[in-house]
Image (cartoon, rainbow, N blue to C red; front, side, top):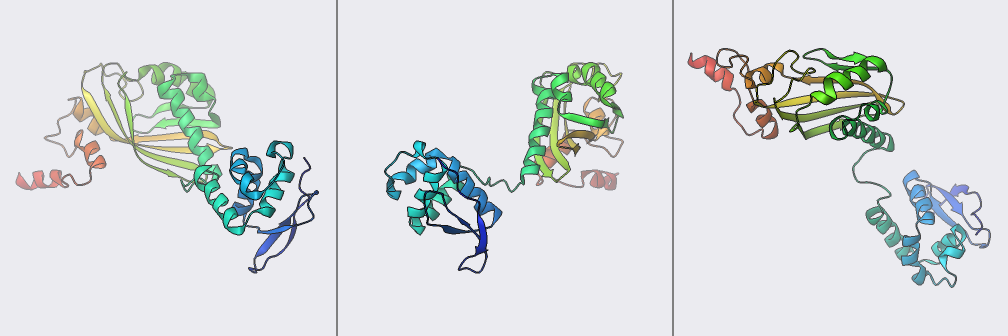
Length: 281
């Protein structure tokens, strides 16, 4: 079918900028607000056969939708009552997810998806090349408490291959707590848990497996360039890890073990235990 002619900008009865759209085989034109969301929805309606099929019968069109494409789409929209059109738009928003309700911009969604692909390469697929394909130079990875990681693709790739991906205990689990997504960075707050069954060069270099369970809050700050991961800054409480492995004595130091992770998940748990312990002494 023929494509609609170029929109003409003018003003509608609501006093807002509008665009007038008509098809070449239909002399009638309809004015639509120029809101980007509305116009994106209109374009989406032109391409969504299922939506048009629902509206086809009420519009009173004789020819099958598949034979006319965009031109028939516009004809249908001209013939629809205002109420039906609004109903169609509502269905499009809710059922067809043209405008997701996650509150994120397309750029933010793209960053989220890239970061999740990066983590999938690390933790699920355990594939260095897949992980590196989500990154861009100049890149760096820094596990802040132990200063492990690397700068530049060769160093990062070697680190992932020898000291990170194969050095993750089999029962490693990441429990999301919160996520903040900006235009160039993501901040992930999570609970990182594992059983210390292998040497973990990136977190516990030089420490033999203890067989003990560890649960810690962990924060990852991820920077992006051109839509790909450029840097990772990973923070956690190393003292809490060492307490849980029995390598330092929490009874004599102002540190805590797995309870730090549990309080992140349940803020109602008691606060100030270390202060109260000091006061008792």
